Amino acid sequence: MLTWIGLVISWIGALGIIAIGVAYLGKNAKNAAGFGLPTSPAPEARGWWQVKGVRDIASGLLVIVFSFAARDQLALLMLLLAVVPLGDMWVVLSNGGDRKAAYGIHGATAVAMLAAAALLAA
Image (tube, rainbow, N blue to C red; front, side, top):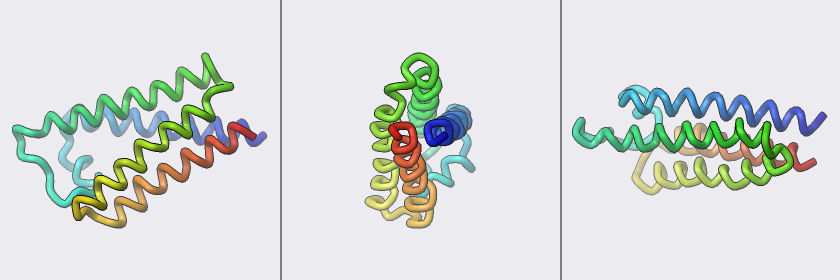
């Protein structure tokens, strides 16, 4: 039962981050504002949003593929991928960004991923 809960958390996270990635590919200013950094890049530098979009889509796809092809390794993948939101939290905090976004979005995401990893490993 715990494994299934971990799998559901993993899938919700995967589908959510894919949707966020798609929004970033469209250079969505509202989506980028929610990241937590104090300012948005100038229009000519918004390609960085697309880099984040590709990263997010790839992360979500990895979780989906592992859940079918290597479910026994999904816990390890979730543990490793938790580095991404932890890194995002650090970036927001170290650049004077919104602390609520840093902890409430990125930190909470990392906690959910670590919980999923623990449940999958149980």
